[in-house]
Image (cartoon, rainbow, N blue to C red; front, side, top):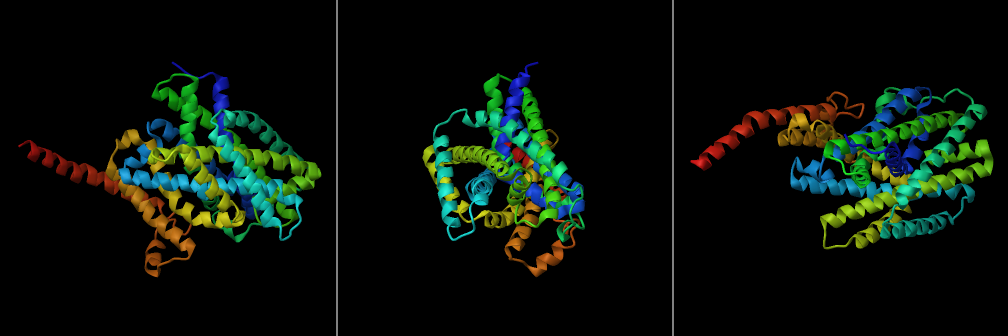
Length: 447
C-alpha cells in the first residue's frame, strides 16, 4: 500500500501548520486566557475544538472532494457553491484574514518600539505598504518559498514559544486571574465561539487544496491514500496548533496579574518584555512577522487562484494586485476595528461552514442527498444570519421572541438543533416525496 516517507509527511504537516499559524492563532488564545481566568481550562478546550478539530476535519473533507469547496457547495446548488465559495475566500482573504495578518505583524514587531503620537497611522501605512509589496512579489513568483519558510520557521517559532512559556514558570505566579462575566456561565461554549475568530475552519477549505497538491507532488497515490496522508499531515499541524493555543493561552491567564490589555498581541509582547527585555521583544516580533507573512502569501495566492478560476478572462496577476491593494487598505483600519467588523460576518459564515463540513464527512451515508444538505444548511443559515445582523445592531423583536426559545440559543449555538431538524426533514422529503415524484416523472416520460 502506497504512502509517503515519514519525512515528507512531516514536511507537509509543518507547511500546513505554517499556513494556519498566523494572526488569529496568536492574538486570541492569550486574550481568552486573560478573560477566562480560573475558568481557563474548559474555555481553551472549547477553543481547541473550533481552532483545531474543525479545521482538521475540513482539510480531510477537502481531500475527499475532487473539486474542493466548489464540489461541497454544489451538493446544495451550483449557485450556492459560487456564492458560498466567494464569501469564504473574501473573508479569509482581502476582507479580514490577510489584513489581520499584516496588522498583527505591525502590532508585535513595530508598535512596541514607537511612542504613541500622531505619526502612528503613518508608520502603520508605511509598514503595510512594505509588507504587501513583498507579499505581492512572492505571489507573482511561484516557488517553494512558503513550504521552505514553513519548514524552517515552524521549529523556530515553536522554540520561541517554548522559551517564552518556560520563562513564565519562573517569573510569573502560577495562579490564574479572575473570571470575567463573559466566561462565567459557559466557559466551554464561549471558548468554542471564540474559536470562530481564527477563521481556520474556513481557511482549511482553501489550504486543504494546497496540502492535497503537495501530497500528489511527492508521490502518485489513489484517493484513499491521499486522504490518509492528508489526515497524517493534519494531525501533525493539529498537535502543533494545540500546543501553541494551550501554552500561550495559559500565559495570557497569568499575565492578568500584571494588567489589562486590549488584545493578545499586546499580551505576548509585554510578556516577552517582562521576561527577556527588549531582545526578547525583537526576536518575538521578527518570528511573528515571518509567520504572518507566510500566512498572507498563502491566502493571497489561494484567493487569487480561486477567483481567476471563477473568472478565467481575468488573469491571476490582476487578482493578486487587486486582493493585495484591498488588504492594504483594510489593514490600515487597525487591528481592533478589523476584529469588530469580522465578528458578525463570521457568526453568519461559521455555522454554515460547520454544517457543510460535517455533512461532507458523512457523505458515504448521506449519498449526495440534496434534501439533507439543503435542509440542514438553510436552517442553520436562518439562525446565523439573524445573529449576525443582531451583532450589527439590526434586530427584530418578533424573531427574537421565537429564536430565544430555541435550545442552546442563549449560549450562541441556537443553529445546532434547527440544522439537525432541517437535515432530517430534507431526508424524509428526499426519500418519500421527491424520489416518488421523480420516478413518476420518468415513468410518464417513457410512456
